[in-house]
Image (cartoon, rainbow, N blue to C red; front, side):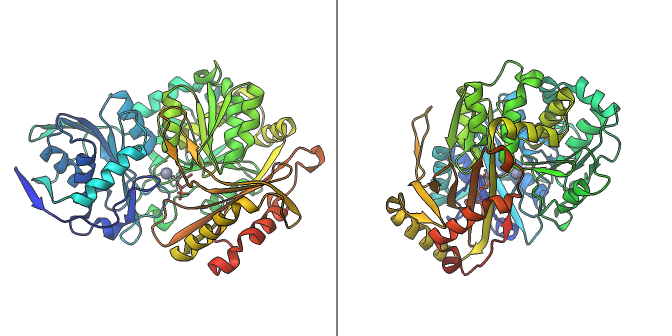
Length: 543
Ligand code: G1P
Ligand code: ZN
């Protein structure tokens, strides 16, 4: 085994986004691309000499090859130990748990989340710090700076390391510990939820359909839902992770999980349906005949979390990303706890969770989680729902009706315009930004604007400030529209338009979402001129 130094040059564009560095797989496979970025991580975090790291990914195409490179580079730079999920697999929440449980110095997750996988699709590398959460901006900035000044990287030459068998081996002076990806995570879930009650629910004939979308949660869901909790065999479908996710988008929403929606809206629907994304941190929840939007799901989980043993003592606080609906705010108010509004991206919840200010967090993009790890957690949300259903004895539809009757309903939808010309999108946002201060007092499609601003966040824990996190325009009566550009896309720009309307009239709680939102949608178009600016007359995706 030889330790070699390879001369290289900075490669443009290696700037970590909302969730690590995401690029086309072929870009990552290009000469020095992965190596440069991994060396920049080491350089950006002050080296890895003597450190212990976690490594795993969602199993997408190139996951296995990238793992070999990262291990060889960790050994070359003096890491003491890398704990790797068997087959180089780990869901994102399971990786976060391992980082915390083994008190390591951080970890690398190989994933592009819900983006498709394959040689012509997406790949990604993300560094998480020792608290188990995505690296905060000061760290990603340091990593980015290191990509811009890199001149060489270290790597050892060796045969492929066998990651298929659990156990310890060495690579030079570094220990490689291959662990079962599921065991520790499943044990953590058993400490949080009433497995006894959920088992009783299933033995009473409750039927579940969990769609793993050919992605990483298959093995986790099969072990926990079928083996430990007794859901009928075959309740977990598409359970084998595939490098191309079976050719689909492993994105749990009504569009990409249409097959699950069809089952849940069909004549012989199971009691509960759920899905998770490529790396297992997102979730979708759907009851028999009723889809539960992520913002509503967050509110319901916050309102009922005390029914689960891990949260029996109540919540210390709640947090949501700014574009997420205000449904959880009303729950927090009723519970008498704080509710924080953060920029988009899970990393902003880390400080609140670490400081004990928030217990439950969520985003409108199908992410919910708690202080048990420092990532959002798809299966966690599914288990909390099951726990609530088991203890309350209610159906999903009953829970939603009760919730809206108590708190009112925040009708909500997100419209995405994908692959828009980046210049056009930036221009539209710039024009809108310059007009913000003049909007209050004006009416659009009959809705009077009360406030309009460019969202900035002052972190209450470390006092850092994050600016330009989305343009929000509020109307009389608590409705609003938010405009934001995606930070995770790999082609052009993605414009996200978030639409929300609050309703507490008991006779108006049962409308079709798009009907309820029609006035807000019209106002958004009138304010921003989306069609003229993007050349699109309809969004590509509506969730
Ligand atoms: C998207 C979601 C955001 C989520 C992120 C990572 O980011 O909107 O809520 O945290 O993916 O899963 P965006 O593309 O909007 O920057
Ligand atoms: Zn994900």
